[in-house]
Image (cartoon, rainbow, N blue to C red; front, side, top):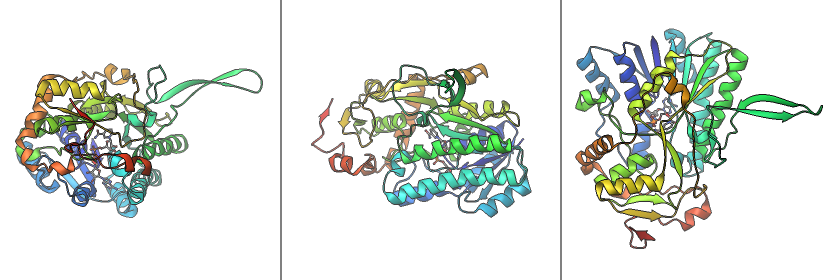
Amino acid sequence: MKIAVLGGDGFVGWPTSLHLSDLGHEVHIIDNLSRRWIDAELGVQSLTPMDSIQERTRIWKQETGNTIHFHLIDIAEDYQVFKNWLSANRPDAIIHFAEQRAAPYSMKSDQHKNYTVNNNVNGTHHLLNAMVELDLDAHLVHLGTMGVYGYSTVGAAIPEGYLNVGIDTMAGETVRQEILYPANPGSIYHMTKCLDQLLFQFYAKNDALRITDLHQGIVWGTHTDQTRRHDQLINRFDYDGDYGTVLNRFLIQAAIDYPLTVHGTGGQTRAFIHIQDSVRCIELALKSAPKRGDRVKVFNQMTETHRVRDLAEMISKMTGAKIAWLPNPRKEAPENDLVVENKQFLDLGLNPTTLEEGLLSEVVDVAKKFAYRVDRSRVPAVSAWTKDIAEGVERDPEHPRLRSVS
Ligand SMILES: NC(=O)c1ccc[n+]([C@@H]2O[C@H](COP(=O)([O-])OP(=O)(O)OC[C@H]3O[C@@H](n4cnc5c(N)ncnc54)[C@H](O)[C@@H]3O)[C@@H](O)[C@H]2O)c1
C-alpha cells in the first residue's frame, strides 16, 4: 500500500513508519517538524540524540534498501499544499499522528491553548475536507487517546468507543441507541481529541469516509525491532515536565538518580501500551478497515492499566530510586479506577507486551547511556491546570521543602 504517515517524525510516528516500510509498504512521512521547534522553544532535547529526518531516512535506505519519502508540510497551516500533495499522490491509507500531543504543554498559557486547538482541530479538519473534495477513498487511521473518556470511576469497563444507552421516549417506550461514549476531556489537548471524534463522526456519516480512531493509552518504551537496527534510527525519548509521559519519566528519573515525581496521592490509574505493540496495532488496524458508509471504527489501543503510585513503587524497588510526593499540577480526581475493554485488537491477534523487568530495564539502560544529555532543571512538571493550582504548586522535587521523600 501507499501510506501517508502524518507526523511521521514523532515518537510513535517514526517507529510506525519504519515498521510499515519493513512490511513492504510505500511510506511517505508528512511532518512540519513542529515538535523539534517546540524542543527549541522549551530549551530541551530528546534524551536520545535524534538525527534530522533526512538523515534518518537515509540510514534506513542504507540498512534495508527501502525508501521512506519525507515531505515538509504543515497540515494545519498549508491547506492548499497539503491538498495538492494528496491529489498528486492519492495514498491508499493515511495515518494521522500530526497533532500537538502534550496535555501540560496545552495548559501552559493562553497562547499554548490557542496553538493546540488551532493546530489539532484545523489539521484534522483539513485532512477530512481535502479527502472529500478529492474523492479520496483512503482509509484514515487516527491516533486518539484514552483520555477522551475521562478517568471517572463508574464501576463499568470502558467500551470501545460506543455506549449502548436507553432513551425514554415521550410515548413511554425505551429506545436503544449506540452513542459515542460521553467525552470528558481533562485538558485542552484532550479536548481537541474529543473534537476530532465529532469531526470523524460527521464525515463518516455525511461523506462515507472510512475512518478508524485508535484511543491509545500512554506509550512507554523507546525501541522497536526496527529502531534497534542502527544507532541513527533511534527513537525520540522525552523526559521533560511537558512531553515526558509518566512511566518513561519514572524510568529516566531512576536512571539519573532523580526522585520519582509522583503527583498528589499517585492514585490516578492510567492505561498503557508498549511502543512495539503500538506500531503493531496500527498494522492490525490497517488490515481491518471499515467499509464505505460504516460508522467510525474505534479501538481501545492499550494493553494494561496501572495506578501511578504502584508504578513508582515497582520502579523504586527495581532500581533503588527514591519517590518524591509532590502537589498535583492537574485538576483531576485524586484517585480513580480504570477498567478498559480491548477485545478487538486481541481478536485480531495482538499479543500484548506487558510490563516486565527486562523491557523496563532496557529503558533504564538507554536512559543511563544518554544521561549526560539531561538538563535536570527541565524534569519537574511546571504547567499548572488553573491559576489557583499554579500558586500552590511546589515545583522542584529536589527542593528541601518536599512533602515527603520515601
Ligand atoms: N505518546 C503517547 O503516549 C500517546 C498516547 C496517546 C495518544 N497519542 C497520540 O499519538 C500521536 C503521536 O504522538 P507522539 O507521542 O508520537 O507525538 P509527537 O509530538 O512525538 O509527534 C507528533 C508529530 O506530528 C508533527 N506535527 C504536529 N503538528 C503538525 C502539523 N500541523 N503538520 C505536520 N506535522 C505536525 C510533529 O512535528 C511531530 O513530529 C498524537 O496525535 C498523540 O495525541 C500519543
